[in-house]
Image (cartoon, rainbow, N blue to C red; front, side):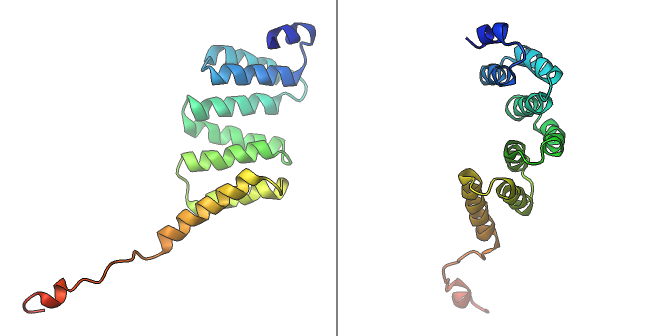
Length: 150
């Protein structure tokens, strides 16, 4: 159906992007690469093409390659929340320090204040961070007092 729409409207970025998502979900890298190339050639399509490329690397490729693409997307579309969401996910996947992850999540809220997913992520990351800072609770043991010579 999407290909049929593109026959009638070959410059419709939304349709190209959605077709790319279908290929991404199905793991069809060669077809996705064609969609990315087509999107990049359209006016205003560079961000959509970059989003698909970053998503490919996050799911199927080398996760480290997604980072520079995401940074470029944020520079190209500073008010768009989706690249910032990808950055937060990427930081989590590469096991970046929790402070960096929290900053990235707060950056999402800066451009999209009501983003519930980012709010939930912040709560979860802050809980993990608090658990790491809190000293472990150890039950009192009398073994030291009962050890001869102690």
